[in-house]
Length: 453
Ligand code: NDP
Image (cartoon, rainbow, N blue to C red; front, side, top):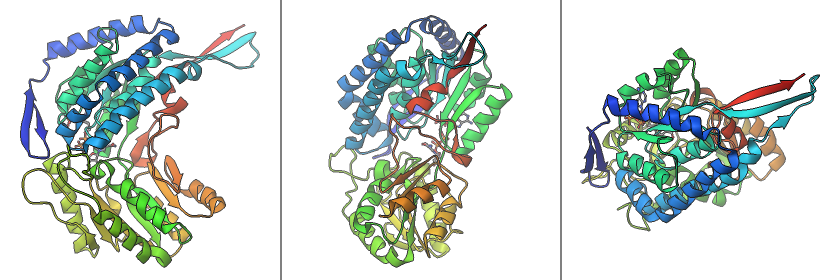
């Protein structure tokens, strides 16, 4: 049984029978035959589906945003922004995919040689609950435009979103069977990965599950894109605009109630400005309003699940026991719902849990450093490598330091965020492969050489 729970109250919203193995089989067969037909359509026709997806998302924006908020608790304004971003990304690929996937002529000793981009087949998408629509659509818009089919195994705490995504696809005019949601337990996924009807896998989720899925896909020799956890540094150098950094820091850490892979998690600040930054950050955090996520002025809603809140609080307790200083928050909120307040831990050291583990919730760690070199060393002292932010007014130095930071993206004087136009993904235990931009659309293509003598 797959159960949807309102994290703001802890009450059950709905329950669903998991799909049977016959239903799973029929979905895979249907996806394979739909994809065989879909891949033969010219890309100009395929991108019409994306335009339809954008329209269906915008038409249903309020309904879908309310569903996101009901099932995983993010503030409603952010849920609406998520739907808008999905629609915009569909529009972006509707316009750009034909250009990204155009044949590339390459000079060689052939009369003619070219690279063409063919689809791979039906891709299994294993997706998390934190951005229940975005995680799927940022994969699906380019993958479908490239001629693939998609099977979605969504996180089991967002089954209504998972089914609503299928509804968006139907309204968009998706060919029958080309995209299907499967309501199944995680334990069923290994069978899907091994199944010949699935050609590739994309996962957004924890590093732990990434390793399991990678080994299963590796055994079956199937292409994977893995977008896993992160412990992004947010470096503030002494010459930075401290007020601006402390304002952006709040959004960078607490958006989505801190449950994003690219939230800034470790605030690495030069000693000379650390007190000023910590005070300004604390003052901004005090303005955040925690409450019912359906209210438009709420900044901090509940966390998505009780166990996620318990795990986060355990990390806070262990960090404090080791010497971290609580500047704000620091304990779960009593009463119904899985609320955890915006929390700041100061004087965090590299051996503290809040530094060496990913904190997936509203907890910021401030680490004080001597200089820029130590800041970069500590930024890199993590098993993750997703994003990084760097604040300084010296842009030449920033460009140089950016090259020394081990991450898939470095944002200077800004916060890390995905953007359909730019590639997104990580290194180290944050995963591999890229989503979005021109790089992302090629991940699930056969980059084929055609040579004419
Ligand atoms: P998981 O990694 O457990 O879940 C992500 C997806 O993987 C879900 O669809 C889940 O399904 C599925 N899954 C779980 N176990 C397996 C398995 N053995 N084989 C195949 N698929 C599996 O994340 P959680 O929801 O448990 O969150 C825990 C942590 O993961 C967070 O604290 C955070 O560190 C990280 N995370 C990172 C995200 C990111 O954006 N990179 C997003 C969400 C979480 P099911 O729901 O049925 O278990």
